[in-house]
Image (cartoon, rainbow, N blue to C red; front, side, top):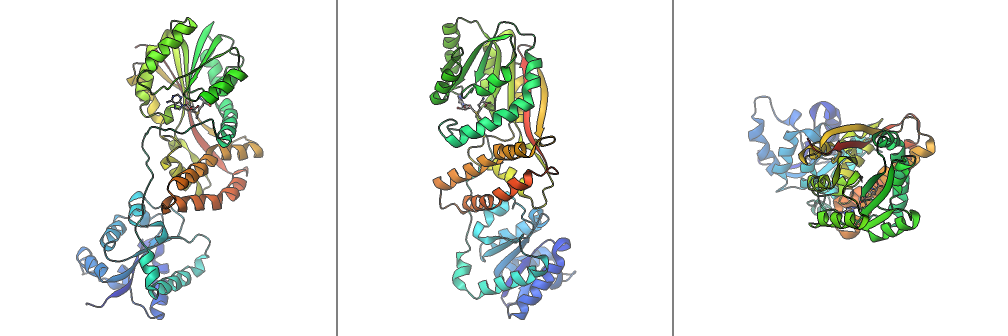
Length: 439
Ligand SMILES: C[S@@+](CC[C@H](N)C(=O)[O-])C[C@H]1O[C@@H](n2cnc3c(N)ncnc32)[C@H](O)[C@@H]1O
């Protein structure tokens, strides 16, 4: 058979069989030819041998994407095979986030969300659109390859945390939630310290630690260090009895900087070292912890508060908003390394620390008031929006980023309202750990 095939329909059999049969019928009624495996391949034919021939003759490849076909290696192989010679059109039936390989192979202009189209209208909608495309050569050519900019790896983060009013406001909401999450544990960790020094690494204005230290009378000397002078100036104005120093904790001479600070303050070592929401932004946390261990007093303690999106749970998540938002958060350029929390435990041991203790994990919406829920939503989700906006400004041509930004903007306000409902459960993966010096 040498006849060309206008449309190849690729899908997951069990979940979308009827939809594909109906769509094929409609496309064929409108005068175009279709091919799909259940009908057009006989049980005796060798699928692996037949498919490359079929795909070579295909004018347009249509993927019915859902959570099942998203995971199918068969579908992936078909796309790889067809990508050289035919445009691809992806109908996202359940708003799932296409896996990386699919994102790489298909551009955003090829991906069409279908969530707001009623199930009974799906086949008609898809077939009409496909036939209109087949009749429009220019539109078909416009379907092209994707670019990716995301990088879910640890990387140096040059983001400034103080300059922007937006980030300052977000941090002030975050303070409240971290206080709720960690206050009791800080009190219990610090209860036996007397006349102790407290080094706050990446302190920003110092406000978070100051709130946590309220009532901890054994801490008598607060020393905040940060690379942002502006944040430190505000800290000096807010807490004149404390000490603030500019320092880059990733710099090669960081250990020397700590020596200078100790000398200036006349102290031998730090009794408590606090590192809160900083390790996720650091390229080599184990190197930093190793340096800090050298400056900790013999019976001192290091407290690390960090985050891990692996512990983020959202229920219900019927349209996949949370799943997709958490995925984006993990991959944007400025939100830090979002699987940082799970690494801290081993990094602490690898840096020669001992007695590593996990005090708390997860802050949930359970028991929060409506307005607190709204604020928690902003703490977690507003910076995803902001990150995407920044990435879009840097790379306006990148359609993956633009599509994620548009999608997020479209959903944001409505999702914020839904999030405030009492029956919505959300758990944010904050983690609080501590470790002592020596073996
Ligand atoms: C998310 S904020 C956390 C601030 C504060 N510790 C808290 O828990 O609210 C991260 C802070 O770490 C600082 N920071 C990031 N990288 C740093 C580095 N390499 N050296 C010093 N400070 C750094 C930032 O300037 C910022 O103030």
